[in-house]
Image 1 (cartoon, rainbow, N blue to C red):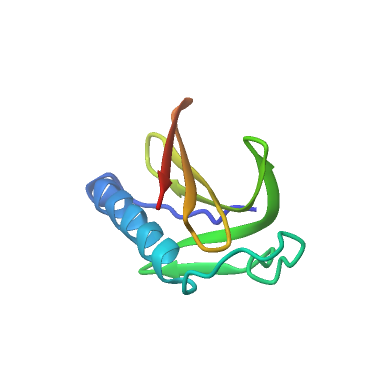
Image 2 (cartoon, helix red, strand yellow):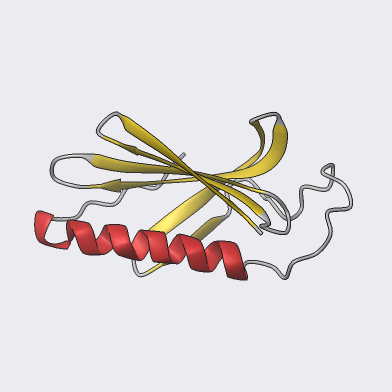
Amino acid sequence: MANLITVNSSTYRMKRILLIAFIALFLVGCSSPQPVQSTKDDSWCVKGTTYGQQGISSTIDGIAVFKGSEFCKASAVLQGEKDDLEYTFYFNKDQSDVWIITNIAGSTQEVHKTN
């Protein structure tokens, strides 16, 4: 379940920028890069774990198959006065393969980052 945050219109853009910055920091700093030994060990992706900074948080949904591969899936929702910003993240154990899916007012965008 994604965490819900209510913001007013004057802080809507700032919260969005902070969320994106938090996500980048989370994906870079949550663990040191290591070769993936086995996707069966999901201790690096514990369902229900919440990561947050300055009132913005993301919740781990667990291991999921996306685009034919196993990833850790995390989600966040930032509520604004007009539209919700829904984020879904898929990343592998060493964060060398990351997908960021954004849904704003029914418009979905995918960003793929690899190292």
